[in-house]
Amino acid sequence: MSINSINTKKFAFVGVSTTESSVNKYFDAWAKLLGQSWRLVHMDAALGDSVRLRQHLYELRDNPELIGALVTSHKAPVYELGSVLGLEEVEPAGSLCEAGFLDKVNGRLRMRVSDVDSQKPVMRRLVADPHVEGGDFLVLGAGGAGLAFAWNAAVESIGRPRSVTVIESDASRVSRAREIVGKWYVESPVMVDHISLSAALESFSQGDTQVTFVVNASGEGKDRISSPCNVEGFSDRPLTFWDFNYRGSLDLLRAFESLPNENLVTEDGLEYFYGGWSVVMSGVAGLRWNASVAESFGDAAKMIDATALPS
Image 1 (cartoon, rainbow, N blue to C red):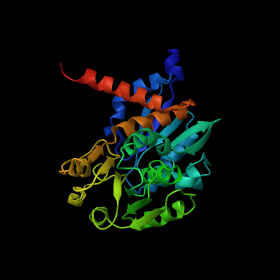
Image 2 (tube, rainbow, N blue to C red):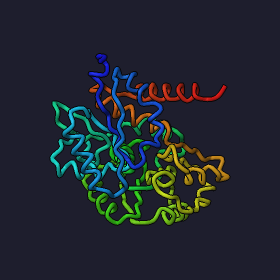
Image 3 (cartoon, helix red, strand yellow):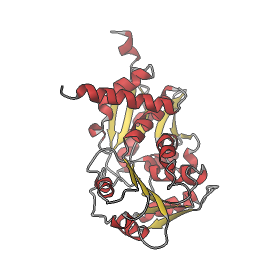
Image 4 (cartoon, one colour):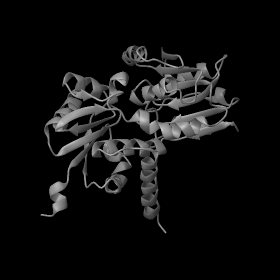
């Protein structure tokens, strides 16, 4: 048996359909960049399946071969279950009530946040557009990624928004999000509205709102079957639209891209995807993260994709 096989640890990917993720192509190369020889394991659960998630947390907590995990789609439920199980929180996990990843220190499983840091490189690039700064920011979805964006905008004042509105159709998520943001010390006001995605887009594209930045953090077009959304009202204003999704039907992104708007900037979730994995894998490895690590992950992924293309 080789030394490498003896030292190989398992890194978990907790989500809804993790076997379909592009990370399966990149993971080994990314681990190598960090000097690791981890093996990726998949831990899937349907949205709302707390029983399955609890089983995954027990496995992560009790199996010494599992050294950590990236969490997607289940950040809030994992945080809530982890709190019940007595897992340690590393700030700002407590301020956001989410767990974007899990790591171990001295065998103890901890809950940490990834989205706040991993969003920043893309977010800072997008708000550098002159029309974005100082406008109203609209966040579609009150899950972990959406609240992390609201935190970056309202608490850390990235883009200096006039206001931040988070919309959510699930009443329980609305109540939870209002409780969370109500504890923040914010530079810009944050509102959480109970409204459907399609109704919010129609409403915020009209009236006296000065929406300059729209973010899709809802899972619409990836984890959820997309419903028709009318975005034509955004045709006549400077706007940046960022879809956190990088795979799936991406219907909402396609709808914005089809607008006859010369002052429209669109961004998919690919760079955010690279950044998220770089934050989590660096954290689990106990290494310091910065934006250059995210860039190296992106470069490695693009090289793998390029070599996979037919000549």
